[in-house]
Length: 124
Image (cartoon, rainbow, N blue to C red):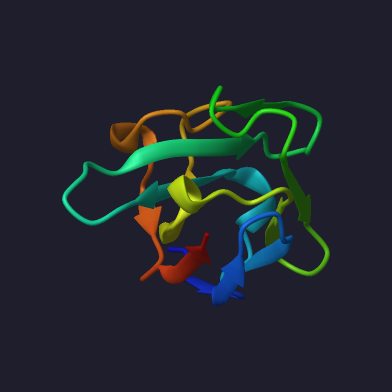
């Protein structure tokens, strides 16, 4: 079993950068594909970015491609999301997710574990 704890969310201004982190417990972290999803008020949770267990493959939502970068450190059991050039529409609760039986986690149903989320607010 994997427990996920996100951190790093806060209030920023449009154009700023922010780095989110997800700390995972469990000895099998390196065997999980990891991902970030987000959910804005009144909207469905949506995919943001994902990374394979080795870190060799990544995939991004079109809305964040070129601005966000996902990375992982299997030695430290962490996955990070570097967010640059933030826009007001990036404001949301960001969730970390882990998927065991998949190369990349691009859909909610592919995730086996979820964190509690961290709030990102972007002022214009």
